[in-house]
Length: 357
Image (cartoon, rainbow, N blue to C red):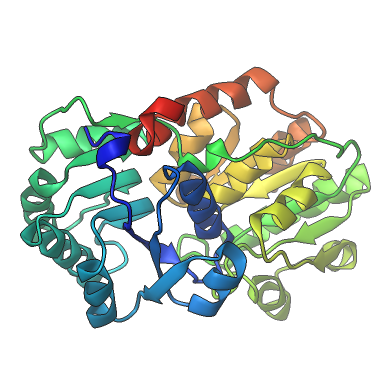
């Protein structure tokens, strides 16, 4: 295992950073907090000015393979920092990009660490073949869930003392005190191909029933500025949002995970499609319920456990959904569940800085 004295002093931290996504910002915040003292990292970022302003670190243009390879040449190690980078659901090109970085690092005899990574989905046979070749090049890995660890083994990575799995690294951020009794319902919803007009109508009718019966304000909090910010207005334009619900709704903006947690800590219920909205909501002490569009969200909800709906298999009646959400109002998760998630996430800190875990 790469112990702290051997950990790269100037690592290249590779992730989906600077994309105006609060979840990835939270991952970067957790990763930087866990680096050994004396590290001078370089971050792959889309909005480099934002990353520098917020975190005060060096960066390179993540959308330019040339720029990232130049930064790698000036670094002494490569760290994949959270998320699911080795997957082909985004595109095969994305997987090839990250595969090129791993290969380049090993050709330069530099260590490669996978920190808090999800593995997959890998839908193509050639994707699985490529990852089977890449995994032996990895020096050490911590996986964010059991399914990723099992898939790594199935693809031929032998179990190593350095490897482990635990909950998502964002669980390492500081928890907050809940102050949301009788507070608003906060939504962190996203566009998804799993929901057509009928399914959106079911969810919005259920939300309208819960908000009206409990006299709650509804706050729409976009988690990804590039994808989520227009969702509420688009649903309204399509005539899918009941008038009563529109009157109770307003949209907020949060630019940092701390701002989002401040909103969550005052919520009577957080309804999260986004994985890290679910985690930050629970860390804020708020009652949470998940709407799962992806196995990673379902796994996180099951680990808590908390109420969840599979978007691919929604109930046919809005009343079934509204009853489930009504039961969650003002009912935060027991502190012991949050503590268990935080303890499980320590494995990621052990990968980077074992003497402080």
